[in-house]
Length: 157
Image (tube, rainbow, N blue to C red; front, side, top):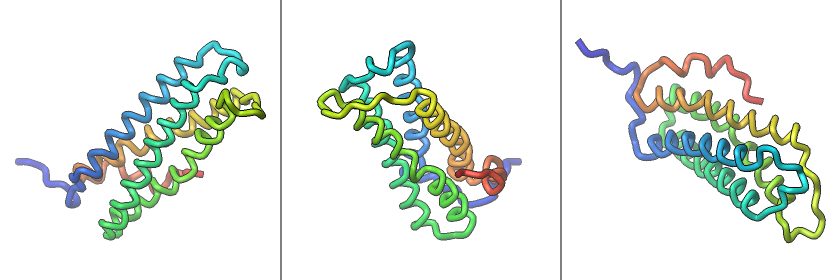
């Protein structure tokens, strides 16, 4: 006897791509952190680091765009509530990456030392959000309630 999904699954290309983006964002952040590990702040003024941050921000923006589309398309309360909660948590995530990338531009006349503790905190917040929403997206993709129960209790500020 097979267990029926609790809800009609969101097994569309946009949801599948959203899950892929979550995995990709985690990978890119890990790759970036390994690249800058042990570097002094003044050694970060390289266009390669700037491009890595902008690629992560670009993937976050695509994820936000796809989830916005899915939330609008699936206006049923269950889907909308969970997709909107995820969107609310992610909307400002790319900003810290874009701003930091601006300051890491080696051509920028006015360079600013990046506060590693603050930046690491912001990166960790993005990773935590991605790690939290990935199982939620997977649950919506499969049409199961498990994985989405905690989202209403989670504070995404």
